[in-house]
Image (tube, rainbow, N blue to C red):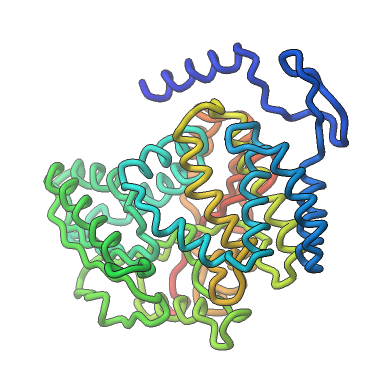
Length: 419
């Protein structure tokens, strides 16, 4: 709470300085006065689309002219649109030169510590409710489900740094009668280099320290391999344990049938069905930028990321170094993959929540209703703690989160249909 009020004070200070968001500026060309200097105003969105079309038709001369102009008017330290243009221009250049995969791998190989990422992540969840409210919804649901369980086994597809679980660990420690045995199977993709399982193993060590601090008995199983190659026996499922499969916003990184004929995405859903969990919690990025047609994909990505950068612009000071870190390491990295990579190298392949609905039902799952008390709690938290342009809605047993009317994230609960 103290952190939030300190943050709000900082934001008010920033707003009174007159550091505007840049929204409402002329959409076409023009000039404006900045500290006595006449500065040309351009429509960066239009320039980026023209540049994408020139890249698609291999018109390198036009691309270079447009990139020169975009670079002149964009910066990672500017307003939301200027920042987006900076990262999108870099991705377009990488696509044109055929260095997209190398540029994306370079992001992965950058030695950013978990502590630095945590600071960026903290800034993101303070400014934006999507991840925090998804975690809250999932954790409160799991806590309620595990009310009388002796052993709780969470199989987390896409555990990453494990930021979701400390709050649940703390809640379990306060359970009347004592906490259950907590088992977490942390699954992620192998990292490039000589230690493919290092990050997922380090996550387990951090969670073990946290469990130790709160007196929660804990076991951890780290798996770093392609998800469709995992077998049920790798998961070390025990009898008489409450079993929850959790995957928030990461199944979009599993290839689909547009990449491989036998869809790995469907294979993972089949594995989850075989696991036969008491609940499968599924969070998705509601994205429409998974088309094989580059210009269409670029345009959809532009719409999606415009919302993300606009959201940060409205809620976090421009000079905040953690905002810059998060935009570069998360938004910039994702944009590079979407724009500059193709085939098996393009890992970011979201579907809309309605497409996932069809896929999940086809895989043999039935949807469970959301807990209305928890949804109400989430809605009130977003209303009281976050910017007025964030929204929480429901559609067909999905909880939807958005910014200025655009649905960006969705979450739902499932169970194998035969169960």
